[in-house]
Length: 97
Image (cartoon, rainbow, N blue to C red; front, side, top):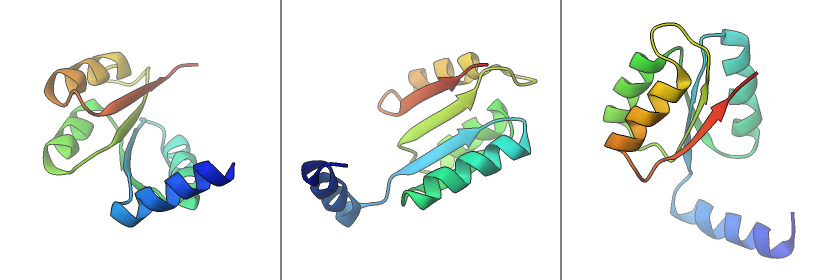
């Protein structure tokens, strides 16, 4: 990380820690993502599916949603499309195999 990037990250962290919502139906994947991002200083919330993720989005300020594509009940693409409609400012990433 360059000095400028480090300075920007420090300045941002003074304001508020970014919150990431990780969505996957596999607990091992969620655990790995949670460890990865917490080490970087982010607040991490996990959900095991789309309906649970949508509920969390209604209750908490989320900056980034990372979702697996293949999940029961609702695909990651469906979840991210719905979140884009309701919360257009949230950044969204779709994980595919």
